[in-house]
Image (cartoon, rainbow, N blue to C red; front, side, top):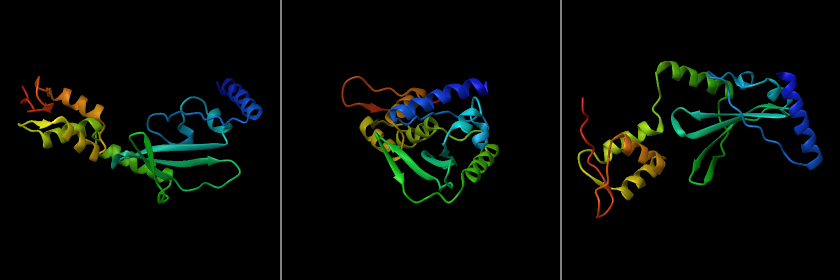
Length: 184
């Protein structure tokens, strides 16, 4: 497989040299991670690349992403940076990350072992709906404003509302609530 992948990458390099284009390949790690050795597919992807960067979600803030260069030909590695995607914009944190990619990966693996499952965005949205709505009702626009303050998208809130079986009454202003009691 290595040779076949390498041949394709060689053709991409020729294309880039002829056209002046940059080629960006995006992949992901095998489950459990492990740095450049864990890139899915063939090791040719890493071997052939001039630069490899790796991205991790911050386990303490699911909306915050951290990115590190983990291979750079002809240069030393620079520190990583963090960013958030807010709407259609990328908001960079310009202070370099204090930890290396390897240290961050180890910290995430330790957290994964410590908890069976970290809460996902929908879980956080469900918690927010319980806190805001409970056994009353609330205007949807106010709920969405609170969600935005907590970096939760409208589509995630709608999914959480469906999970809780929240409905908007017909006619009148759009409101969600109350949260129906659980049936056992």
